[in-house]
Image (cartoon, rainbow, N blue to C red; front, side, top):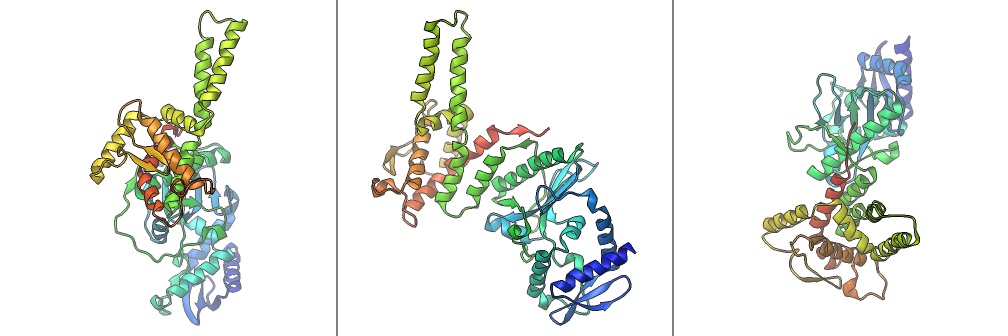
Amino acid sequence: MVEKSAKEKLMEVYSKVGFEISSELSDSFNLRFNKKELIHVAKEDIREYALFRESISDFLTKPGACSLCTSSFREQLLGPLSEGASKWLKSSSIACFGEKQNSELYVEIGPCSQDFFNYIRTDEFFLKTMRGELKSKLEELSESDPVDARYVYRPKTIRVVNMSEDNLEKALEISTEYIESCLLYLSMEYGFNMRLCSDWIDSLFLKDCYQPKEGFFATLPLPKFSYHSDLTSYYLSAQSHINPENQFLGYYHVLEYFFQSATEKNLKEDLTSILAKPDFTLDEDHLEILLDSIKTHRIDYRRDIDAFKLMLKTYLNESEAIAFIKEFHADINYKYYTQRINLFGEDVHIQLKRGHVWGEIAKRIYAIRNAIVHSSEKYSRDERFIPFSEYREIVQRELPLIRFLAEQIILATSKRIK
């Protein structure tokens, strides 16, 4: 009786979007499309759909319509942020973070699971997309061998499997940390920039029409650290843009995020050192010292570029920045960043000496940021970024350094996943 109801439901939804019921048995049926009998809805398919309908109360559609979640499992639809990701999402490739054994937690990206397929298969937007997929494959399909309805089109999802949380909210929190870490890894290591889809229209369902290089992905390490969600979004935004100016601003937003926290941290350290002195008392002289420290701090870091320099000094390692620049120069066989040049009205060059690096880097990056952001006529042409001009090549050359810094900030502010 349950399977009969499931069969009737499937026949109803397929008919609504233009498929014809071409032949029907008691436990299966075929669909006609474009005057050809091309799709078979098998007995096993109907049984699986019936079982899913009975268990649907075990799943919650959180955090959005394109997601299924329990306390042990989460699956959500993926969409591309770049051409490379779009091609990979259209393929049948699978990426797995962690080992699928011994009931250990792992994260997998690939064609959606059977449960997720049964969840979305009656959605009108999905069915219309499936029709479009069939149109593109008409020459490959034959009436003598109808394709199983379960495999006409399976959009890619990301799945977090074998969680052991006590409640849904904790499962959502943990799964989000793993998902964001995995997507960040694919962006940094492979340039595949993907995002979670919040609704079906947002997903722009992708068709399985592209074959990547075989064996591109092996099993990947399960992330041990989570990364700041906002920084991950800024970074993926930068990675997804084609225009160098938009990439630059995306990376800059990662750096700018901690300007205020760096200055507040510095002020707290100054005040703590004063308050910790054995002879400190709440008399007028000592209170004046506190006020002077606060005033000096406000003067020293009233400009963004000063806060920028302090942020670099607070969160990053100067020796690693020097090593990166030296390695980059060796790769291109040219000492680009240490050359003295005029960059949008600023005379810049980086001295690869401890104590000199952060000030020069801050000056360099801030000059480019201002040139891109400001278009006022009060600035000369040499001080402004003009789209579709030779200035685009200048910004392009500056991307490796700011991308490195953005990645270092993301890594430096990470937290171990509990």
